[in-house]
Structure formats: structure tokens, C-alpha cells
Length: 446
Image (cartoon, rainbow, N blue to C red; front, side, top):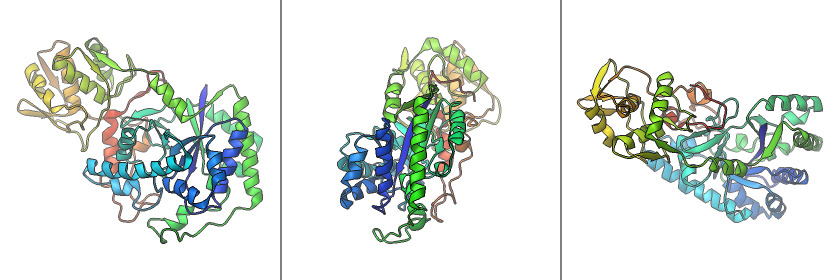
């Protein structure tokens, strides 16, 4: 069965007229008995109250609420201000700004929690992923960090669910037969997030393409408003949207859920506890492929390296928690090295919980990479007095996540011309040590 989530990028803080799209879609889904998640821009929540749009606020009260960031395309955007060397400085700014946006959402909409963080465009900053998790948000939506089958993944400690299918343009002229064909495609997935931008059933163009393309083109509050769509286009989209919802409700291949339901199911997976007895199985899996495992439980490479450190320092089990990847490219040895058990154990102090992992580990008078050390520790735990490490890639394959593997943000979407992507794309890949997949999902191969 395919899980369906309806997600709404609720974003246009420049036009009260655009907010009619929110009203129409929120009421339509309520009438059909379906709860969606409206991911609201903080500044839009603030303006809904300023505009006196109590009708929209009331309509949203029947749905789940997420955040679509504080200011969407207001520059500097998240990618722009988090593309700096100092992760902690970037995260502090992100949390401060995003907390203000969430405060606007909570105050306007009367909710006590937001269930998903949905970045606009391709704002896939690793800083934001860690930051939203730290803020207690369980789901990161519209992401690069999901498989093509929609199995979802944990990446930078937060669970990722990618957007699958945008409906506002499709529904402008879709026939019932075309809707059925699309549902047949979605039924092949484990999860599908169907998304829409409510403003785009009202307006001909995106508000930010006119006001925020590459820079803040107009003074705040003096925005240019896109032209309205003809009423018959809006009516057709809403009619077809109702047809789509009804077809999904009747189809036994689908289960409609929300982000909060997904989060509840994730919590039900329970605590992950690694014991020494698991090491042999984990070692055999890593010899086959340097990749996260799903048996005997869902574990990232970072989970395993922390567990091995604990076992070598006398602990009998490791309780998995937050993990971190690397801030620069992990070191790769150039030739074969032989290391003693004592040298491997002495390096444990370099692996610290709650911190980014070291890219280079000193073992005796030699340096090795983190994956070299991980495999070496496993051999020591299994009884070896010496271990031999050979040159190998230190990061897992990202072929299952091609957008992460190939990410290059510079010159894309609404980024300013001065944006360099000096750190973000590479560091997103360097966090692959935190990647893991649910044990109950289909097996993912590296």
C-alpha cells in the first residue's frame, strides 16, 4: 500500500488575494474529510493576521501545520546565509530566524507544534536539517535526501520525505483518465507526497519570481502582484482536485496519512541499541558495501563508529542518538597499513559523541580515514591483535540519492549572483555518514 501525504506550500506573503487559494483548498479538503499539511511561511502567517483574513485562519485550523521557512525567498535565503565555514554560527542564525517564523505561525494559527519543515526551491542546507531537528521538528519535506521509491531516510538526524507530484499545473487540463494514469504511477511507490502551491490556483506567476529573483527587487511591503488567473482556470483546478482526492480515497492501493502520523509511526520504531554480539553481522555487511544497514536494525555509519568506540572503552552496549558527519572530505590512505590493537584502541578519544566526526584519525604515528578505523575497530572487537587497512572510499555511495550526489546550488533557482556554494553541496555529501533507512522499509543497497 502506498502512503499519500497532501502537502501545501503556503507562501505568498505579498498578496491577500493569493490567500484565497489557501481558503479554497483548505475548505475543499475539509469537505472531503481529508487533512493536509499546510507548510506556512512565517511572514505569511504574520500578514494573514494583518490583512484580517480570519476566514483563511479558520480554514487552516482544520489541518496540520508545517513551516515553509521564515521568509521563503527574502534575501539572504537560508542557503545564502548558511554557506559559511562556521557551522555553529550558521546554525545559531538559522534557529533564531526560523524560531521567529514559527512564533508567527503559532500565534496566528493557534497551533502548539509544526510537524514538518519544507524548504522552498532547492534550499537544501545541511545546516537547516540539523537545525530543524534541534528545534524538535520531526519531518523534513521536499528534500534531496530520499530514495526514488519514496522510502524516506534519516539524514542529519531528521527524517526526510521527498515531494513526488505537483498538481496545480497538471490539474488545469487533466482528464479523469490522465488522473488514473498518474495514480497508477504513484501506486508503485512506498510513499508519495502530493503537493501544491495555493497561490498558483489564483495567480498566473509566482510572487517571488517578480519580487525576489536573485535579490530583493522591491522595498519590503511595496510588492508587485502577479495577474490573476481567469476564474474558469481556478474553477477547473478545484474541480479536478476534488476528483483526484475522491479517487485516492476510494482506491485500496492508497492510505492517506499526515506528517504527524508519519512522525508517530517513526517514534514507534523504538530505541536502537547496538550490542557487541551485533558486530560480526555488521562487519560482514560493511565488507560487502560501506553503507548503512537495516539489519539487525537501522544504523548509520556514524552510529556504528560510535558503538565501536563505546565497546573498545569498556561499554557493553551503545544506545543510538544524534549523529554528525564531516565538515571536510575524509582522509584516504594511499597504501596498505598494518595497525596494532593498542593503536586502534588509543585512537578512541578522537571520536566524540555529539560532535562532527574527525576526517582524519591518528593511529600510532600514522593517519587513517574514519572508515578505515571503523573496520579496524570491528576486527579488534572480533579478536584481532593486528589489522591491515587498504585504500578505499571513506564515504558511502550516494547513487540511491542522485540529487545529493550531484548537488551544485550555485547559479540555481533564486540564488543571488554572489552566492558561491562554497560549503553547502560538499558538506551535504559529507553528512552521508548520518544516512540510514528504516528497518521496515524495502532494502536499500549502496
